[in-house]
Image (cartoon, rainbow, N blue to C red; front, side, top):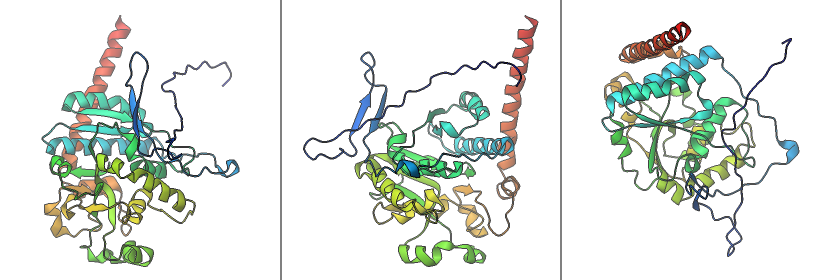
Length: 351
């Protein structure tokens, strides 16, 4: 650049950090719920007090380095997310609200969301939470997202939200999610679907059947994190967030632990934070589930196949018949929006 460049920045949020202690116990009042606001608007946001874990030494803190998959990769995942959303809306009869991690959406996706909401009649909200400085940091973008999926469920959503359902972006929903929302978790704070065992030719890839996981789980199932339902009231009541963060802080110091962070952590903590096993049909994946069980699938997950390594979009068109229909409908909407934008620009130029 050979000439001066002018840049404008907009202050979007202020980060508030604080500590509080119970005078009678001299301990943080873990799980205390409170609101923050101004004199004129007393309730702006709400949050809870979390247990503060040991702070790392300053010389041990590494610089955050976020890997970037590139524009082409982001475009593919934008398309996959929109198709997942459309499959939810097509099969769920009650009103739907989508929650998105704001920091990890592309500008294009954020631009299109309001138009999709208007077209299909759903609500949405962008949420974000600053990773605490005292909690062991992740540096890879994918692992940071995995961390948000499990470590901050108690503080990421407003306190008025009772339940949330997490659906992986590369998933097609074929059933009304209200049934999953109303599913009895038998007192557990969350419910996950176990990995399928029915495709026997993949037995050699089932890492949870041997070694540490076999001895840790005993007769229990290893659960997949592609779909789960969380009772946030129960989750907060039993301080599940603090328990999970405490175990994460210990295990994450070892680079060989928590290779699948969002999955390994809740399975590791199954004796301290119970998991309710959802019926198998709530998550069908061709890699692990046999062909016969596909007809009962309430969702289809496009999980990677370690044997074939088939590209995701190619697998989607082959495995999910309705994929092409959804993809075509979304493309038509995007084309319509692009034409409207071009028309507006031409009109402005003429003026």
